[in-house]
Length: 196
Image (cartoon, rainbow, N blue to C red; front, side, top):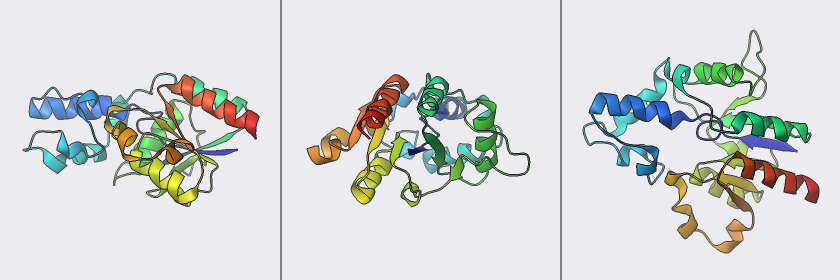
């Protein structure tokens, strides 16, 4: 099975470093638990506003970002089941190469000397990839995937996607599985493998 796997928030714990930089520069104490929706500019100080997204283009950002707990082992377990993962992610200007290097550094992708890794797909619309399953933390991405493609998704629960519980009907949750960690993600993939 071909699986589309998001990067930021799924394999890469981007918010740790992103919010550290913001808190340092704006004398704040914002944590990911304080971000109750996808729009980060809603949760930062007004003087920061949409400038919060400028941090994403800083060339050294990914040098300080840790992997999500369990993600490296989880990806290996899924691969051991015979599945092929593509790391599908939206990027701002300046993000593509550092994110590719991060994926290589932590063993998610193989290094390709002259090109981006084959398993790395910078893509704004994840529905453009012909995969059987999406693993993501963006509520907007899983909604579009499940409703648009009619294919299953796994939503890794985060404070900024909890609103999804109240906004969709039960038919959506028949195709979208909630996970609380990488063990849950692997279990969902294993159950799909046995059902196939």
